[in-house]
Length: 71
Image 1 (cartoon, rainbow, N blue to C red):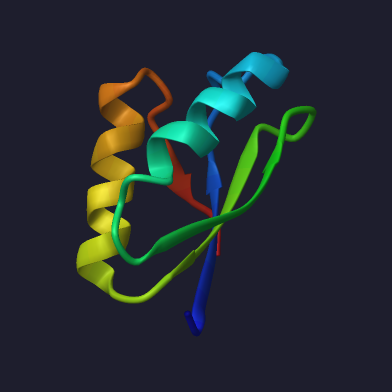
Image 2: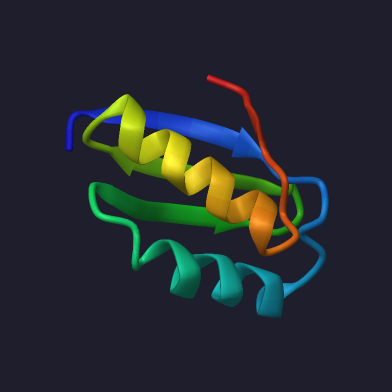
């Protein structure tokens, strides 16, 4: 996975949120969760394609953690 992105997810409030995000995104083909930073409310992902990233963003929205691209 050559692409990496940081997503701001303001609804992250605790380690339980981080575990939920990691568990749910694990099911998305072409996505690897590199980290979930609870204090900064940032999810860092490695992704194979824009389609995989779009699917991950959609899933985050569905599970209550809408995210905005930072980089």
